[in-house]
Amino acid sequence: MNEADIDVSAFRREPNTILRATLRLSLIYWACMFVADSVLGYFINIDPVESAPLKFVLYGLSALMTYAMSMLLFRMRRLSFVQKALLNFALSAVGAPIYTAIDFMNYTLCQYPKPVTFDPVYSGYTLIEGASQLFGWCCLFTAFLYHFEVRDRERRLAAIREEALTAKMHALHYQINPHFLFNTLNSIAELIKEGSGTQAERMVLSLATFLRTTLSLDPMHDTLLADEIALQQDYLAIERERFSDRMTFTIKMPEEVSDALVPSLILQPLIENAIKHGVSASADPVEIALQASHQAGRLRIMVENDVPDDGTETILRQGMGLGLRNVAERLRLRFQGEANVSFGLVTPRRFRVAIDLPWRSA
Image 1: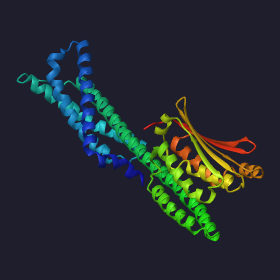
Image 2: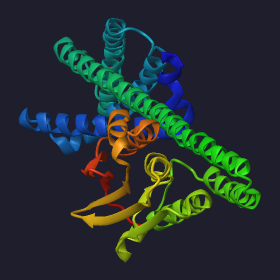
Image 3: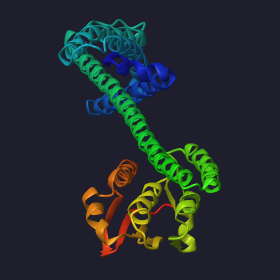
């Protein structure tokens, strides 16, 4: 994308809008000139009512002249600032005598059949007045073009940022599935190795259903917290094939919180980590507890799990690995610093990850 593309893109997309805006601006500009000239004429004993028809014709023709000047300025929009300034001076210098001639001929027609003599002093004032008004219009229209170029540039940059954000969110989203898939396939392999073919078969079917659901989710769209938790329960049903004897999952959530909106699959890495660092690493019964609450316009979600005594240092050192970094980065991109993730031990054998984000409900 080059600068020329940015300059003309708005005009290519909305030519009628630009044209109407230019005509409205021209109408407002010359209406202001009409009023200002009438007010000034009143103070030098020129009747504003009697002079109105003459001024109406003068400013009407001047508006047509400035429209032609505007088209030329638009065609020369790629010039540098200095070149544009010189062009504005040149157009004003060329247009001022035409403005003066229109004023003189208009006055002559109004006075017909009375003879009219050429007054160089009055014509000189008219020449200066015309040059000032035309130069003012040229500067105003140059700023008008710049406004549309800047607005279009901002729109394009916003679109580029949105595309980049979408691509990054998709990349983070799809990091979840391989991570989860590898863990689950390892679990299935272990079940087969242990001779638990029936359990492995159920796990494969559950895995297929879970992946079909997760792959259909759009990372740029939010989901109900209740649906997100239901999806994690489907995931835990897969893992329960391995750890049914020592894994429990509890949920503590008020009814009103179930309608809260959260990024899709935002809990998946946290539940995976609870399985990996809690259930898989311990021979003792492990509880995974999920709590959600609405506090002062914020949604707070906590995932806790028991950990073995000898695994706490590893967990803290690794910072829960890719999963937690993924969650933190997704929330940073999605909420632009208005959400955060914290984690740590709440007791020597209890680990907690807390997500705090703005409250939004369906």
